[in-house]
Length: 600
Image (cartoon, rainbow, N blue to C red):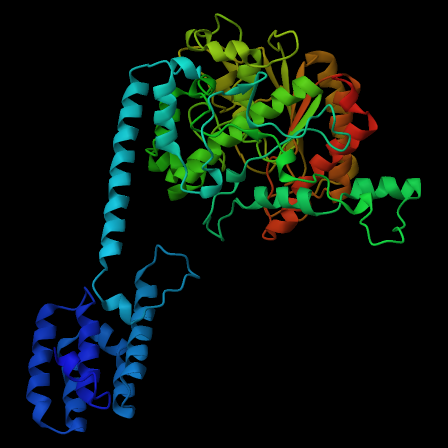
Protein backbone atom coordinates (compact mmCIF):
# COMPACT_ATOMS: atom_id res chain seq x y z
CA UNK A 1 0.00 0.00 0.00
CA UNK A 2 2.86 2.36 0.76
CA UNK A 3 4.28 1.66 -2.70
CA UNK A 4 0.96 2.70 -4.18
CA UNK A 5 0.93 5.94 -2.20
CA UNK A 6 4.28 7.01 -3.59
CA UNK A 7 3.83 6.01 -7.21
CA UNK A 8 2.99 9.63 -8.03
CA UNK A 9 5.98 10.95 -6.10
CA UNK A 10 8.99 9.28 -7.63
CA UNK A 11 11.23 11.86 -5.97
CA UNK A 12 10.32 10.78 -2.41
CA UNK A 13 13.07 8.61 -0.86
CA UNK A 14 10.41 6.46 0.85
CA UNK A 15 9.72 4.93 -2.54
CA UNK A 16 13.33 3.88 -2.84
CA UNK A 17 13.31 2.47 0.68
CA UNK A 18 10.18 0.41 0.11
CA UNK A 19 11.41 -0.94 -3.22
CA UNK A 20 14.76 -1.97 -1.73
CA UNK A 21 12.97 -3.59 1.22
CA UNK A 22 10.62 -5.30 -1.26
CA UNK A 23 13.68 -6.77 -3.02
CA UNK A 24 15.05 -8.12 0.27
CA UNK A 25 11.74 -9.80 1.11
CA UNK A 26 11.96 -11.67 -2.21
CA UNK A 27 15.33 -13.06 -1.15
CA UNK A 28 14.87 -16.32 0.72
CA UNK A 29 18.19 -15.88 2.54
CA UNK A 30 17.08 -12.70 4.36
CA UNK A 31 15.65 -13.48 7.83
CA UNK A 32 12.10 -12.23 8.28
CA UNK A 33 13.12 -10.78 11.65
CA UNK A 34 15.57 -8.51 9.87
CA UNK A 35 12.84 -7.25 7.57
CA UNK A 36 10.53 -6.49 10.53
CA UNK A 37 13.26 -4.63 12.39
CA UNK A 38 14.12 -2.58 9.33
CA UNK A 39 10.45 -1.68 8.95
CA UNK A 40 10.50 -0.24 12.48
CA UNK A 41 13.51 1.89 11.56
CA UNK A 42 11.70 3.20 8.51
CA UNK A 43 8.55 4.10 10.46
CA UNK A 44 10.64 5.94 13.03
CA UNK A 45 12.49 7.78 10.24
CA UNK A 46 9.30 8.95 8.55
CA UNK A 47 9.17 12.28 10.43
CA UNK A 48 12.78 13.21 9.62
CA UNK A 49 14.29 14.74 6.54
CA UNK A 50 15.02 12.81 3.42
CA UNK A 51 18.73 12.66 4.15
CA UNK A 52 18.02 11.47 7.68
CA UNK A 53 15.82 8.70 6.31
CA UNK A 54 18.57 7.57 4.03
CA UNK A 55 21.06 7.51 6.90
CA UNK A 56 18.76 5.43 9.09
CA UNK A 57 18.07 3.11 6.19
CA UNK A 58 21.78 2.52 5.74
CA UNK A 59 22.11 1.82 9.47
CA UNK A 60 19.29 -0.68 9.23
CA UNK A 61 21.14 -2.46 6.44
CA UNK A 62 24.32 -2.72 8.51
CA UNK A 63 22.44 -3.83 11.64
CA UNK A 64 19.92 -6.37 10.40
CA UNK A 65 21.19 -7.69 7.06
CA UNK A 66 24.00 -10.28 6.93
CA UNK A 67 27.34 -8.74 6.07
CA UNK A 68 27.62 -10.57 2.73
CA UNK A 69 24.31 -9.13 1.51
CA UNK A 70 25.04 -5.71 3.02
CA UNK A 71 28.26 -5.42 1.04
CA UNK A 72 26.43 -6.31 -2.16
CA UNK A 73 23.87 -3.57 -1.54
CA UNK A 74 26.50 -0.82 -1.12
CA UNK A 75 26.01 0.20 -4.72
CA UNK A 76 22.26 0.46 -4.15
CA UNK A 77 22.71 2.71 -1.09
CA UNK A 78 25.11 4.97 -2.95
CA UNK A 79 22.57 5.36 -5.73
CA UNK A 80 19.88 6.07 -3.15
CA UNK A 81 21.82 9.04 -1.83
CA UNK A 82 22.63 10.52 -5.23
CA UNK A 83 19.48 10.10 -7.28
CA UNK A 84 15.76 10.59 -6.92
CA UNK A 85 14.61 8.13 -9.60
CA UNK A 86 12.77 4.94 -8.66
CA UNK A 87 13.68 3.39 -12.01
CA UNK A 88 17.40 3.97 -11.52
CA UNK A 89 17.46 2.48 -8.01
CA UNK A 90 15.36 -0.49 -9.11
CA UNK A 91 17.79 -1.15 -11.95
CA UNK A 92 20.70 -0.99 -9.51
CA UNK A 93 18.94 -3.34 -7.12
CA UNK A 94 18.18 -5.92 -9.80
CA UNK A 95 21.77 -5.71 -11.06
CA UNK A 96 23.05 -6.46 -7.56
CA UNK A 97 20.58 -9.33 -7.17
CA UNK A 98 21.67 -10.70 -10.57
CA UNK A 99 25.33 -10.80 -9.46
CA UNK A 100 24.31 -12.59 -6.27
CA UNK A 101 22.32 -15.16 -8.17
CA UNK A 102 25.16 -15.93 -10.56
CA UNK A 103 27.56 -16.74 -7.71
CA UNK A 104 25.09 -18.99 -5.89
CA UNK A 105 23.96 -21.02 -8.91
CA UNK A 106 27.13 -23.08 -9.30
CA UNK A 107 25.42 -25.86 -11.22
CA UNK A 108 24.70 -23.50 -14.11
CA UNK A 109 27.08 -22.94 -16.99
CA UNK A 110 29.92 -20.55 -16.20
CA UNK A 111 29.00 -18.27 -19.08
CA UNK A 112 25.29 -18.22 -18.24
CA UNK A 113 23.78 -14.84 -17.45
CA UNK A 114 20.65 -14.15 -15.47
CA UNK A 115 18.93 -10.79 -15.76
CA UNK A 116 16.11 -9.71 -13.49
CA UNK A 117 13.51 -7.04 -13.85
CA UNK A 118 10.62 -5.71 -11.83
CA UNK A 119 8.29 -8.54 -12.89
CA UNK A 120 10.56 -11.16 -11.31
CA UNK A 121 9.42 -9.89 -7.90
CA UNK A 122 5.72 -10.16 -8.69
CA UNK A 123 3.56 -13.24 -7.92
CA UNK A 124 3.29 -15.77 -10.79
CA UNK A 125 0.47 -15.26 -13.24
CA UNK A 126 -2.44 -17.67 -13.54
CA UNK A 127 -1.14 -18.80 -16.92
CA UNK A 128 2.25 -19.65 -15.42
CA UNK A 129 0.64 -21.61 -12.57
CA UNK A 130 -1.46 -23.63 -15.02
CA UNK A 131 1.62 -24.32 -17.17
CA UNK A 132 3.56 -25.59 -14.14
CA UNK A 133 0.66 -27.84 -13.15
CA UNK A 134 0.50 -29.34 -16.65
CA UNK A 135 4.26 -29.92 -16.60
CA UNK A 136 4.11 -31.70 -13.23
CA UNK A 137 1.27 -33.90 -14.52
CA UNK A 138 3.37 -34.86 -17.55
CA UNK A 139 6.34 -35.73 -15.36
CA UNK A 140 4.14 -37.83 -13.08
CA UNK A 141 2.65 -39.66 -16.07
CA UNK A 142 6.12 -40.31 -17.47
CA UNK A 143 7.25 -41.61 -14.09
CA UNK A 144 4.34 -44.04 -13.88
CA UNK A 145 4.93 -45.20 -17.46
CA UNK A 146 8.61 -45.79 -16.73
CA UNK A 147 7.75 -47.84 -13.64
CA UNK A 148 5.27 -49.94 -15.61
CA UNK A 149 7.82 -50.46 -18.40
CA UNK A 150 10.55 -51.54 -15.95
CA UNK A 151 8.20 -53.98 -14.23
CA UNK A 152 7.17 -55.55 -17.55
CA UNK A 153 10.78 -55.80 -18.66
CA UNK A 154 11.83 -57.32 -15.32
CA UNK A 155 9.10 -59.95 -15.58
CA UNK A 156 10.59 -61.13 -18.89
CA UNK A 157 7.78 -59.89 -21.16
CA UNK A 158 8.63 -60.54 -24.80
CA UNK A 159 8.43 -57.40 -26.91
CA UNK A 160 7.17 -58.52 -30.27
CA UNK A 161 7.74 -55.90 -32.92
CA UNK A 162 4.85 -56.87 -35.19
CA UNK A 163 2.48 -53.92 -34.95
CA UNK A 164 -0.77 -55.84 -35.51
CA UNK A 165 -0.13 -58.10 -32.52
CA UNK A 166 1.40 -55.44 -30.30
CA UNK A 167 -0.32 -52.13 -31.04
CA UNK A 168 -0.86 -51.21 -27.40
CA UNK A 169 2.79 -51.69 -26.48
CA UNK A 170 4.04 -49.59 -29.38
CA UNK A 171 1.60 -46.80 -28.48
CA UNK A 172 2.84 -46.91 -24.89
CA UNK A 173 6.44 -46.61 -26.07
CA UNK A 174 5.50 -43.66 -28.26
CA UNK A 175 4.05 -41.80 -25.26
CA UNK A 176 6.92 -42.76 -22.99
CA UNK A 177 9.89 -41.80 -25.11
CA UNK A 178 8.61 -39.01 -27.35
CA UNK A 179 11.28 -36.33 -27.31
CA UNK A 180 10.61 -32.72 -26.32
CA UNK A 181 12.41 -31.71 -29.51
CA UNK A 182 9.91 -30.81 -32.23
CA UNK A 183 12.19 -32.00 -35.00
CA UNK A 184 12.01 -35.58 -33.78
CA UNK A 185 8.28 -35.73 -33.01
CA UNK A 186 7.25 -37.54 -36.17
CA UNK A 187 3.96 -39.43 -36.53
CA UNK A 188 4.03 -43.14 -35.75
CA UNK A 189 3.82 -45.40 -38.77
CA UNK A 190 1.75 -48.58 -38.92
CA UNK A 191 4.66 -50.44 -40.45
CA UNK A 192 8.17 -50.90 -39.09
CA UNK A 193 9.87 -52.55 -42.07
CA UNK A 194 9.79 -51.17 -45.62
CA UNK A 195 10.81 -53.96 -48.01
CA UNK A 196 12.60 -55.52 -45.06
CA UNK A 197 14.49 -52.29 -44.20
CA UNK A 198 14.13 -50.80 -40.70
CA UNK A 199 13.52 -47.24 -41.89
CA UNK A 200 11.04 -44.46 -41.18
CA UNK A 201 11.87 -42.58 -44.39
CA UNK A 202 13.14 -44.00 -47.68
CA UNK A 203 15.78 -41.79 -49.24
CA UNK A 204 16.77 -41.35 -52.86
CA UNK A 205 16.52 -44.63 -54.78
CA UNK A 206 20.08 -46.01 -54.98
CA UNK A 207 19.31 -47.74 -58.28
CA UNK A 208 18.65 -44.32 -59.81
CA UNK A 209 21.30 -42.41 -57.87
CA UNK A 210 24.41 -41.83 -59.98
CA UNK A 211 25.82 -39.29 -57.54
CA UNK A 212 26.35 -40.96 -54.16
CA UNK A 213 25.77 -44.09 -52.10
CA UNK A 214 22.80 -44.48 -49.70
CA UNK A 215 23.35 -42.37 -46.56
CA UNK A 216 21.58 -42.57 -43.20
CA UNK A 217 20.87 -39.60 -40.94
CA UNK A 218 18.38 -38.50 -38.27
CA UNK A 219 17.78 -34.98 -36.97
CA UNK A 220 17.90 -36.08 -33.33
CA UNK A 221 21.57 -37.11 -33.49
CA UNK A 222 22.51 -33.67 -32.09
CA UNK A 223 20.16 -32.98 -29.16
CA UNK A 224 19.52 -29.33 -28.27
CA UNK A 225 21.04 -27.43 -25.34
CA UNK A 226 24.14 -29.59 -25.17
CA UNK A 227 26.81 -28.06 -22.84
CA UNK A 228 29.12 -25.98 -25.00
CA UNK A 229 32.25 -26.86 -23.04
CA UNK A 230 31.61 -30.60 -22.92
CA UNK A 231 34.52 -32.68 -24.23
CA UNK A 232 32.22 -34.64 -26.54
CA UNK A 233 31.09 -32.33 -29.39
CA UNK A 234 27.52 -33.55 -29.86
CA UNK A 235 26.83 -30.92 -32.55
CA UNK A 236 29.34 -32.55 -34.88
CA UNK A 237 26.64 -34.79 -36.39
CA UNK A 238 24.57 -31.78 -37.39
CA UNK A 239 27.62 -30.07 -38.90
CA UNK A 240 28.55 -33.24 -40.78
CA UNK A 241 25.14 -33.23 -42.45
CA UNK A 242 25.48 -29.48 -43.05
CA UNK A 243 28.80 -29.97 -44.86
CA UNK A 244 27.38 -32.71 -47.08
CA UNK A 245 24.29 -30.65 -47.88
CA UNK A 246 25.95 -27.24 -48.34
CA UNK A 247 29.65 -27.54 -49.22
CA UNK A 248 30.84 -28.25 -52.74
CA UNK A 249 32.24 -31.76 -53.12
CA UNK A 250 36.00 -31.77 -53.75
CA UNK A 251 35.92 -35.03 -55.69
CA UNK A 252 33.21 -33.82 -58.06
CA UNK A 253 35.15 -30.64 -58.69
CA UNK A 254 38.32 -32.64 -59.40
CA UNK A 255 36.45 -34.85 -61.85
CA UNK A 256 35.06 -31.85 -63.71
CA UNK A 257 38.52 -30.32 -63.93
CA UNK A 258 39.84 -33.49 -65.52
CA UNK A 259 36.98 -33.43 -68.01
CA UNK A 260 37.63 -29.76 -68.85
CA UNK A 261 34.18 -28.65 -67.70
CA UNK A 262 35.23 -26.43 -64.81
CA UNK A 263 34.66 -23.18 -66.75
CA UNK A 264 31.48 -21.43 -65.80
CA UNK A 265 28.88 -21.07 -68.55
CA UNK A 266 28.17 -17.66 -70.03
CA UNK A 267 24.86 -17.44 -68.17
CA UNK A 268 24.80 -17.34 -64.37
CA UNK A 269 23.65 -20.93 -63.92
CA UNK A 270 25.55 -22.90 -61.26
CA UNK A 271 27.68 -25.65 -62.83
CA UNK A 272 27.46 -29.22 -61.56
CA UNK A 273 30.86 -29.16 -59.87
CA UNK A 274 29.80 -26.41 -57.45
CA UNK A 275 26.82 -28.33 -56.12
CA UNK A 276 26.98 -30.16 -52.77
CA UNK A 277 27.19 -33.93 -52.64
CA UNK A 278 23.62 -34.45 -51.39
CA UNK A 279 21.13 -32.10 -52.99
CA UNK A 280 18.28 -32.47 -50.49
CA UNK A 281 17.85 -33.55 -46.91
CA UNK A 282 15.09 -35.88 -48.09
CA UNK A 283 17.68 -37.92 -49.98
CA UNK A 284 18.94 -39.33 -46.66
CA UNK A 285 17.48 -42.57 -45.35
CA UNK A 286 16.12 -42.05 -41.85
CA UNK A 287 16.26 -44.79 -39.19
CA UNK A 288 13.52 -45.73 -36.77
CA UNK A 289 13.08 -43.64 -33.64
CA UNK A 290 12.92 -45.18 -30.18
CA UNK A 291 9.11 -45.62 -30.01
CA UNK A 292 9.15 -47.75 -33.19
CA UNK A 293 12.48 -49.55 -32.85
CA UNK A 294 11.91 -53.04 -31.36
CA UNK A 295 13.85 -53.39 -28.12
CA UNK A 296 14.20 -57.11 -28.83
CA UNK A 297 16.73 -56.10 -31.51
CA UNK A 298 19.02 -54.76 -28.76
CA UNK A 299 19.13 -57.66 -26.33
CA UNK A 300 21.08 -59.76 -26.85
CA UNK A 301 23.84 -58.62 -27.12
CA UNK A 302 23.00 -55.75 -24.71
CA UNK A 303 22.27 -57.03 -21.21
CA UNK A 304 18.56 -56.52 -20.33
CA UNK A 305 19.32 -55.10 -16.87
CA UNK A 306 21.64 -52.42 -18.26
CA UNK A 307 19.25 -51.64 -21.12
CA UNK A 308 16.23 -51.07 -18.91
CA UNK A 309 18.27 -48.95 -16.48
CA UNK A 310 19.43 -46.72 -19.31
CA UNK A 311 16.03 -46.39 -21.01
CA UNK A 312 14.34 -45.52 -17.72
CA UNK A 313 17.03 -43.01 -16.72
CA UNK A 314 18.01 -44.92 -13.56
CA UNK A 315 21.68 -45.64 -14.24
CA UNK A 316 23.88 -45.39 -11.17
CA UNK A 317 26.36 -42.58 -10.67
CA UNK A 318 29.19 -45.03 -11.36
CA UNK A 319 27.73 -45.99 -14.73
CA UNK A 320 27.07 -42.37 -15.70
CA UNK A 321 30.59 -41.39 -14.72
CA UNK A 322 32.15 -44.18 -16.82
CA UNK A 323 30.02 -43.17 -19.80
CA UNK A 324 31.22 -39.58 -19.44
CA UNK A 325 27.90 -37.79 -19.97
CA UNK A 326 27.10 -37.58 -16.23
CA UNK A 327 23.72 -35.90 -15.62
CA UNK A 328 23.09 -35.63 -19.38
CA UNK A 329 22.64 -39.42 -19.51
CA UNK A 330 19.13 -39.08 -18.03
CA UNK A 331 17.87 -36.62 -20.63
CA UNK A 332 15.05 -38.04 -22.81
CA UNK A 333 16.70 -36.45 -25.85
CA UNK A 334 19.96 -38.32 -25.23
CA UNK A 335 18.14 -41.61 -24.60
CA UNK A 336 16.22 -41.26 -27.84
CA UNK A 337 19.22 -40.23 -29.96
CA UNK A 338 21.28 -43.13 -28.58
CA UNK A 339 18.72 -45.72 -29.71
CA UNK A 340 18.24 -43.90 -33.03
CA UNK A 341 22.00 -44.01 -33.60
CA UNK A 342 22.02 -47.80 -33.14
CA UNK A 343 18.99 -48.07 -35.43
CA UNK A 344 20.87 -45.96 -37.98
CA UNK A 345 23.83 -48.34 -38.07
CA UNK A 346 21.42 -51.28 -38.39
CA UNK A 347 19.78 -49.59 -41.39
CA UNK A 348 23.19 -48.75 -42.89
CA UNK A 349 24.24 -52.40 -42.72
CA UNK A 350 20.99 -53.45 -44.40
CA UNK A 351 21.54 -50.94 -47.20
CA UNK A 352 25.11 -52.17 -47.62
CA UNK A 353 23.91 -55.76 -48.01
CA UNK A 354 21.31 -54.62 -50.52
CA UNK A 355 23.40 -52.20 -52.63
CA UNK A 356 27.01 -53.08 -51.78
CA UNK A 357 27.86 -49.89 -49.87
CA UNK A 358 26.24 -47.42 -47.46
CA UNK A 359 27.39 -44.83 -44.94
CA UNK A 360 26.04 -43.51 -41.65
CA UNK A 361 26.46 -39.92 -40.44
CA UNK A 362 26.88 -41.21 -36.86
CA UNK A 363 27.74 -44.51 -35.16
CA UNK A 364 30.91 -46.28 -34.11
CA UNK A 365 30.18 -46.57 -30.37
CA UNK A 366 32.98 -49.09 -29.88
CA UNK A 367 33.82 -48.64 -26.16
CA UNK A 368 30.45 -49.85 -24.82
CA UNK A 369 30.16 -53.44 -23.64
CA UNK A 370 27.03 -55.49 -23.07
CA UNK A 371 26.91 -54.58 -19.38
CA UNK A 372 27.91 -50.90 -19.37
CA UNK A 373 28.73 -47.86 -21.43
CA UNK A 374 32.19 -46.29 -21.49
CA UNK A 375 34.12 -43.49 -23.14
CA UNK A 376 31.14 -41.43 -24.43
CA UNK A 377 29.47 -44.56 -25.84
CA UNK A 378 26.39 -46.18 -24.30
CA UNK A 379 25.06 -48.92 -26.62
CA UNK A 380 27.49 -50.68 -28.96
CA UNK A 381 25.90 -50.34 -32.41
CA UNK A 382 28.54 -52.50 -34.12
CA UNK A 383 27.80 -55.46 -31.84
CA UNK A 384 24.04 -55.03 -32.28
CA UNK A 385 24.41 -55.13 -36.07
CA UNK A 386 26.66 -58.20 -35.91
CA UNK A 387 24.10 -59.97 -33.71
CA UNK A 388 21.13 -59.16 -35.97
CA UNK A 389 22.93 -60.11 -39.17
CA UNK A 390 24.26 -63.44 -37.84
CA UNK A 391 21.14 -64.53 -35.94
CA UNK A 392 19.74 -67.96 -36.71
CA UNK A 393 16.52 -69.57 -35.61
CA UNK A 394 17.16 -71.34 -32.34
CA UNK A 395 19.98 -69.05 -31.18
CA UNK A 396 17.70 -67.27 -28.73
CA UNK A 397 14.07 -67.88 -27.83
CA UNK A 398 13.23 -64.19 -27.67
CA UNK A 399 14.36 -63.44 -31.20
CA UNK A 400 13.03 -66.73 -32.56
CA UNK A 401 9.53 -65.73 -31.52
CA UNK A 402 9.84 -62.30 -33.15
CA UNK A 403 8.01 -62.48 -36.46
CA UNK A 404 9.41 -59.18 -37.75
CA UNK A 405 13.01 -60.42 -37.53
CA UNK A 406 12.09 -63.12 -40.02
CA UNK A 407 11.15 -60.31 -42.43
CA UNK A 408 14.29 -58.33 -41.52
CA UNK A 409 16.42 -57.85 -44.66
CA UNK A 410 19.79 -59.63 -44.45
CA UNK A 411 20.48 -60.28 -48.11
CA UNK A 412 18.66 -61.30 -51.25
CA UNK A 413 18.64 -64.99 -50.31
CA UNK A 414 17.44 -64.25 -46.77
CA UNK A 415 20.15 -66.34 -45.18
CA UNK A 416 22.04 -64.89 -42.21
CA UNK A 417 25.58 -63.57 -42.49
CA UNK A 418 28.12 -65.97 -41.04
CA UNK A 419 31.13 -63.69 -40.46
CA UNK A 420 31.25 -59.95 -39.73
CA UNK A 421 34.54 -58.05 -39.71
CA UNK A 422 34.83 -54.69 -37.92
CA UNK A 423 37.67 -52.58 -39.36
CA UNK A 424 38.24 -50.04 -36.59
CA UNK A 425 40.50 -47.13 -37.57
CA UNK A 426 39.56 -44.89 -34.64
CA UNK A 427 42.56 -43.61 -32.67
CA UNK A 428 41.22 -45.38 -29.57
CA UNK A 429 41.04 -49.16 -29.41
CA UNK A 430 37.53 -50.62 -29.76
CA UNK A 431 37.77 -52.52 -26.49
CA UNK A 432 34.01 -52.78 -26.11
CA UNK A 433 33.48 -54.36 -29.53
CA UNK A 434 36.30 -56.83 -28.87
CA UNK A 435 34.62 -57.97 -25.66
CA UNK A 436 31.67 -59.34 -27.63
CA UNK A 437 33.67 -61.99 -29.48
CA UNK A 438 35.87 -63.20 -26.62
CA UNK A 439 35.25 -66.84 -25.72
CA UNK A 440 33.78 -66.73 -22.17
CA UNK A 441 35.22 -70.19 -21.47
CA UNK A 442 38.74 -69.11 -22.42
CA UNK A 443 41.11 -68.47 -19.53
CA UNK A 444 42.97 -65.85 -21.55
CA UNK A 445 39.93 -63.55 -21.53
CA UNK A 446 40.61 -62.68 -17.90
CA UNK A 447 44.40 -62.46 -18.12
CA UNK A 448 44.53 -59.27 -20.17
CA UNK A 449 41.94 -57.44 -18.09
CA UNK A 450 39.34 -57.30 -20.84
CA UNK A 451 35.72 -57.81 -19.98
CA UNK A 452 33.53 -60.35 -21.72
CA UNK A 453 30.12 -59.11 -22.87
CA UNK A 454 28.05 -62.22 -22.27
CA UNK A 455 25.11 -63.19 -20.12
CA UNK A 456 23.34 -66.43 -19.32
CA UNK A 457 26.80 -68.07 -19.67
CA UNK A 458 26.97 -67.53 -23.42
CA UNK A 459 28.76 -65.12 -25.75
CA UNK A 460 26.43 -64.90 -28.74
CA UNK A 461 29.02 -63.49 -31.16
CA UNK A 462 31.96 -65.77 -30.52
CA UNK A 463 33.10 -67.17 -33.88
CA UNK A 464 30.88 -64.72 -35.80
CA UNK A 465 32.38 -61.29 -35.03
CA UNK A 466 36.01 -60.40 -35.78
CA UNK A 467 37.84 -57.13 -35.12
CA UNK A 468 40.76 -55.49 -36.90
CA UNK A 469 41.96 -52.53 -34.86
CA UNK A 470 44.56 -49.82 -35.57
CA UNK A 471 44.98 -47.46 -32.62
CA UNK A 472 47.45 -45.32 -30.68
CA UNK A 473 49.21 -47.59 -28.22
CA UNK A 474 49.46 -44.97 -25.46
CA UNK A 475 45.89 -43.69 -25.74
CA UNK A 476 42.59 -44.61 -24.05
CA UNK A 477 41.70 -47.30 -23.02
CA UNK A 478 44.85 -47.91 -21.03
CA UNK A 479 43.85 -51.52 -20.23
CA UNK A 480 43.64 -52.88 -23.77
CA UNK A 481 41.27 -55.65 -24.87
CA UNK A 482 42.17 -58.59 -27.10
CA UNK A 483 41.12 -57.95 -30.71
CA UNK A 484 41.32 -60.52 -33.48
CA UNK A 485 43.92 -58.38 -35.26
CA UNK A 486 45.54 -55.75 -33.04
CA UNK A 487 47.93 -53.08 -34.36
CA UNK A 488 49.07 -50.54 -31.72
CA UNK A 489 50.83 -47.55 -33.29
CA UNK A 490 53.42 -45.19 -31.77
CA UNK A 491 52.69 -41.56 -30.95
CA UNK A 492 53.00 -39.11 -33.87
CA UNK A 493 52.68 -41.95 -36.36
CA UNK A 494 52.98 -40.50 -39.93
CA UNK A 495 50.85 -41.27 -42.97
CA UNK A 496 53.18 -43.77 -44.63
CA UNK A 497 53.61 -46.03 -41.60
CA UNK A 498 49.87 -45.92 -40.88
CA UNK A 499 48.82 -46.80 -44.44
CA UNK A 500 51.38 -49.59 -44.89
CA UNK A 501 50.25 -51.19 -41.63
CA UNK A 502 46.60 -50.91 -42.69
CA UNK A 503 47.16 -52.54 -46.09
CA UNK A 504 49.06 -55.44 -44.53
CA UNK A 505 46.36 -55.97 -41.88
CA UNK A 506 43.52 -55.88 -44.41
CA UNK A 507 45.13 -58.48 -46.67
CA UNK A 508 45.65 -60.79 -43.70
CA UNK A 509 42.06 -60.41 -42.50
CA UNK A 510 40.56 -60.98 -45.98
CA UNK A 511 42.43 -64.27 -46.35
CA UNK A 512 41.76 -65.64 -42.86
CA UNK A 513 38.28 -64.37 -41.96
CA UNK A 514 36.69 -64.19 -45.44
CA UNK A 515 34.05 -61.73 -44.13
CA UNK A 516 30.60 -61.46 -45.64
CA UNK A 517 30.01 -57.99 -44.17
CA UNK A 518 32.47 -55.26 -43.17
CA UNK A 519 31.66 -52.52 -40.65
CA UNK A 520 34.15 -49.70 -41.12
CA UNK A 521 34.72 -47.29 -38.22
CA UNK A 522 36.29 -44.24 -39.89
CA UNK A 523 37.23 -42.24 -36.79
CA UNK A 524 38.82 -38.87 -37.57
CA UNK A 525 40.54 -38.55 -34.18
CA UNK A 526 43.65 -39.89 -35.94
CA UNK A 527 44.01 -36.38 -37.42
CA UNK A 528 47.09 -34.47 -36.31
CA UNK A 529 45.01 -31.63 -34.82
CA UNK A 530 42.51 -33.76 -32.88
CA UNK A 531 42.18 -32.90 -29.19
CA UNK A 532 42.27 -36.51 -27.96
CA UNK A 533 44.40 -38.11 -30.65
CA UNK A 534 48.11 -38.93 -30.49
CA UNK A 535 48.78 -39.68 -34.15
CA UNK A 536 49.90 -37.31 -36.91
CA UNK A 537 47.71 -38.32 -39.85
CA UNK A 538 46.99 -35.58 -42.39
CA UNK A 539 43.71 -34.97 -44.19
CA UNK A 540 45.23 -36.49 -47.32
CA UNK A 541 46.27 -39.50 -45.24
CA UNK A 542 42.72 -39.98 -43.96
CA UNK A 543 41.44 -39.74 -47.52
CA UNK A 544 43.85 -42.46 -48.65
CA UNK A 545 42.93 -44.58 -45.61
CA UNK A 546 39.20 -44.43 -46.37
CA UNK A 547 39.77 -45.12 -50.04
CA UNK A 548 41.96 -48.13 -49.21
CA UNK A 549 39.36 -49.80 -46.97
CA UNK A 550 36.28 -49.05 -49.10
CA UNK A 551 37.85 -49.90 -52.47
CA UNK A 552 39.27 -53.21 -51.23
CA UNK A 553 35.82 -54.23 -49.98
CA UNK A 554 34.13 -53.28 -53.25
CA UNK A 555 36.77 -55.04 -55.36
CA UNK A 556 36.22 -58.26 -53.38
CA UNK A 557 32.45 -57.95 -53.52
CA UNK A 558 32.13 -57.56 -49.73
CA UNK A 559 29.30 -55.25 -48.57
CA UNK A 560 30.71 -52.39 -46.49
CA UNK A 561 28.90 -50.07 -44.06
CA UNK A 562 30.86 -47.01 -42.91
CA UNK A 563 30.27 -45.13 -39.63
CA UNK A 564 31.94 -41.88 -38.53
CA UNK A 565 33.56 -42.94 -35.23
CA UNK A 566 35.33 -40.49 -32.93
CA UNK A 567 36.53 -36.96 -33.49
CA UNK A 568 37.19 -34.08 -31.09
CA UNK A 569 37.83 -30.46 -31.95
CA UNK A 570 36.81 -27.08 -30.51
CA UNK A 571 35.94 -25.97 -34.04
CA UNK A 572 32.88 -28.20 -34.48
CA UNK A 573 32.22 -26.96 -38.00
CA UNK A 574 35.73 -27.99 -39.12
CA UNK A 575 35.19 -31.32 -37.35
CA UNK A 576 31.97 -31.83 -39.31
CA UNK A 577 33.85 -31.31 -42.58
CA UNK A 578 36.43 -33.86 -41.41
CA UNK A 579 33.71 -36.42 -40.67
CA UNK A 580 32.12 -35.77 -44.08
CA UNK A 581 35.29 -36.98 -45.80
CA UNK A 582 34.48 -40.71 -45.56
CA UNK A 583 31.07 -40.10 -47.17
CA UNK A 584 32.70 -38.21 -50.02
CA UNK A 585 35.21 -41.03 -50.54
CA UNK A 586 32.38 -43.58 -50.60
CA UNK A 587 30.54 -41.47 -53.16
CA UNK A 588 33.65 -41.25 -55.34
CA UNK A 589 34.01 -45.05 -55.37
CA UNK A 590 30.24 -45.37 -55.96
CA UNK A 591 30.62 -43.31 -59.13
CA UNK A 592 33.87 -44.97 -60.25
CA UNK A 593 32.45 -48.49 -59.95
CA UNK A 594 28.95 -47.45 -61.15
CA UNK A 595 27.49 -49.36 -58.25
CA UNK A 596 23.92 -48.23 -58.95
CA UNK A 597 23.91 -50.73 -61.83
CA UNK A 598 24.65 -53.73 -59.61
CA UNK A 599 21.15 -54.05 -58.19
CA UNK A 600 19.32 -53.84 -61.50
